[in-house]
Length: 79
Image (cartoon, rainbow, N blue to C red; front, side, top):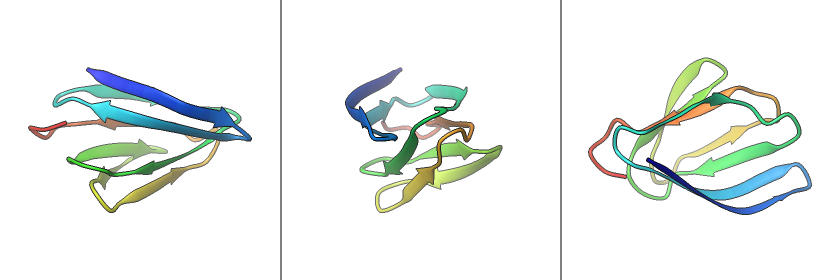
C-alpha cells in the first residue's frame, strides 16, 4: 500500500513523507494550488510527471508544479 504522512500544506507547497510498498501505485492526479517536491530518501521507484516516468531514489529530487498531473509506482522489491 501507500502511507502518506502530511507534515504541512501551506503557502502553495505540500510537505509529506510518502512510503510506497513494493507493487503499489499512486494513480495520476494533480494539486491545483500546490507545488510538490519529492526527495528520494531510500529505496527506488518512479514518479510520473506530465505523462513521463522518471526514476526516484536516494539523492534524487523531483519538483512538480501546481496543476501538473503526477503519480508514483514502486516496482522494486523494497519500500
